[in-house]
Amino acid sequence: MGNPSMVDFADSKELIAKLRQSDEHAFEFIFHQYYPRICLYALQFTNDDKEAEDIAKDAFIKIWKGKKEFESIDHLKSSIYQATKHVGLNYREKNSRSIKREEIFLYDQDKVEINHLDFMIESEVFGSLYQAIQQLPTQARKIIISTYLEGKSNQEVADLMNLSVQTVKNHKLRALNLLRKQLNLQTFQLLTTGYFIIKFLPQ
Image 1 (cartoon, helix red, strand yellow):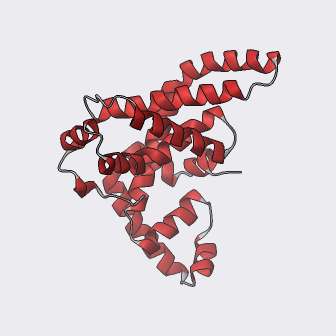
Image 2 (cartoon, one colour):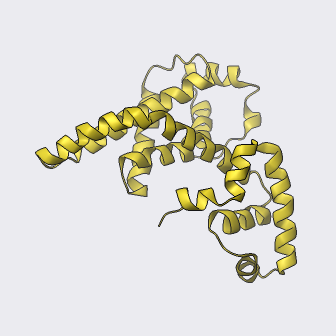
């Protein structure tokens, strides 16, 4: 798939109308827009990143094959999360190998219902951050990812990118100014305080 840009659709109403018509380009846009956050959401059903990606892909396939009677973007997003939850629960049920594990599954199913909103909120926060970072200039994007998401020091990044430390700092400052304009204050503060290193980087 390519990577459609936001300008491909005049507004959300046009996008929803295209989806109702099973327009592949519209669905491709939605997939690229929400796939990263849906993968994150799917991690509650498995400890494996690849399996989470498979769950997310199956959820999008479920959306594509189902009725596309979406009333709004919020309705669409809710439908994607619900589809992911159903696929994830089915995935975990199929992987239960004993009565004990099935009992754990039933317990976890109740827990998923309770935590569903929390996982959605975290996924949406990460998704908005991911999209904002992707829009940064190439060097600035690499520096933000290396420092704030991977936890590297300015000196480490300078050595890796063959830049001076001051150049790294300048790129970082410009990038942060751009991100501050696009992100809400809470998400911006989570980035700068290292929350995403703790929460979302693979161990």
